[in-house]
Image (cartoon, rainbow, N blue to C red; front, side, top):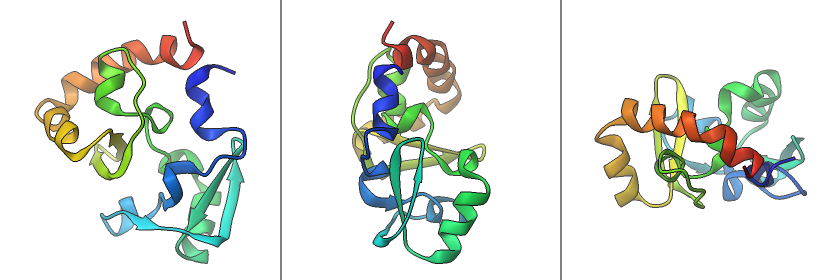
Length: 129
């Protein structure tokens, strides 16, 4: 397991406790509840409703943030950065998180370019290579 997988491992709470589903169906971040969770890839995923938990359980890969939940802009520069769940973007059906809203604004100036660069770096980042 590489270092970038740590965001989803060791019993940690994913996305700092935010429910991943509302980014897609409500287009906003929503905090999850401690009593509505699902463990996936070693992380604890909290949800704001049983419906969202079921939706995630049916298709988890559709709901998780790209780059292991690390900052999309940082990944495009070959680095790992923590994220603010409120600094999010849905782009082409995928969830991207960033370090801050100001970083997200920079990243949003060229989503395709930054995604392409992040994709190139991601294999090395997630394996620690």
